[in-house]
Image 1: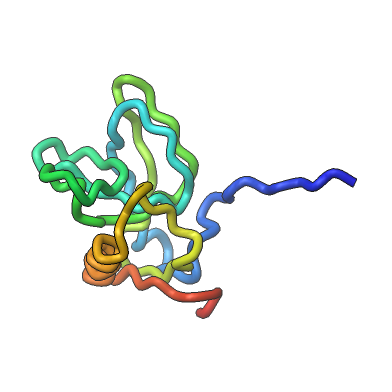
Image 2: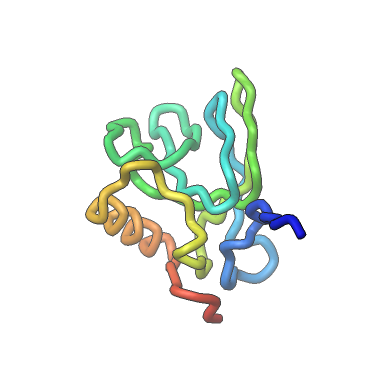
Length: 126
C-alpha cells in the first residue's frame, strides 16, 4: 500500500484562540509569496505589508507579529491573508520558521509573539 502524506491543514497549529474572530486579522501580504499555515510573519513598517519573518532585515520584517492562518500564494502585486495576531495558543512544533534561523533569533521571535499574547505550547494542551 502506498504511503500518503497529508499537507499542512488550515489552522492546524492552533491549540486555542479567542472567541469569535478576535485573534485574527486580514492583512496585506508581500508579492510573490507561497506560504503555508503556521508561517511566522513580520511586517514591513514603512509599507504595512506582511511577509515571512526575516531576522536579518531592518524593515520591520525582523520582528514576529503573527502567524499565517491558511495557505497563501500571492502574485506580483501581493495579496491578502488571515493571520493570528493576538490571543492564541499555538503548537510550537507546527510553526514554520525561516530557513537558517538561529536558536537565539527564534527565542526573540517567541518573546515577540508572547507580547501579543500568542503563546507557544508543546503538544496539544488547551
